[in-house]
Length: 133
Image (cartoon, rainbow, N blue to C red; front, side, top):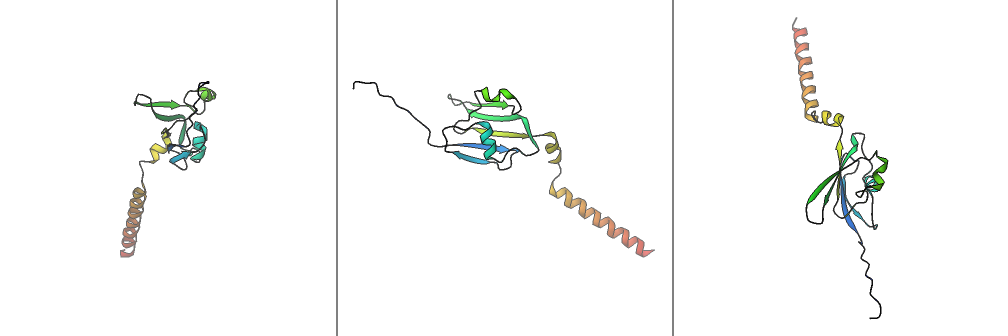
């Protein structure tokens, strides 16, 4: 060979996961060469009103096999200069819920049904007491 060969390797597609307080949490297959954090969140339908914009976790496996968790602040204008702005194969973005969502999660649908049942029971007892007089 007269010239040194040049080999260019490109990812045809790879997957990322976006979970937590987003409208469509899922695993997405990326067909572009690269995708950034903001594009990934857009794929997931953006954050819900309960998502913490200043505390998005990026979970990435490093080259030595260790899992690292990086906190990203979407409100920081320097995010685009971060080495974690562009996502890699098997990255997971987790959007944490804010305090309002965590407080509301204590009350389930079962709580509402129990309260409705108690309300009906109190109404029936009150009606029976009123009619028996």
